[in-house]
Length: 147
Image (tube, rainbow, N blue to C red):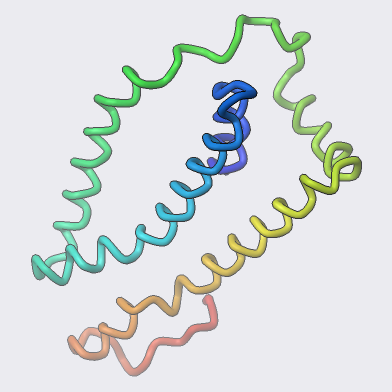
């Protein structure tokens, strides 16, 4: 859900002159984040010998973001009522109409759905599942059926 919210908010906050660059950077960050979210914890766990270290690194990174982001992000997006008093539910209800009217929205939405499906379906087949057998904690090769 975060990419669908973060990208348009970043585009609005960036302004017309920097919008393309900022949306590109946000997209790059989201892609790297989803890719590295499995690689980095696996490397940390392998280097330290315990999976708890990966959680400790994540906690430290989250604490660092908690200190940095409030200083770097704007306080709010526009003044209250600036967007005509539309509720969040009403904005969501308008999305199908926007997708139908604008081809340039349909293609990224379809690509995003495909990326989401690929990452979601690959979860049970992650390399850490294959290591379970080597460490003697699993009962045979992992099943990559998603169940």
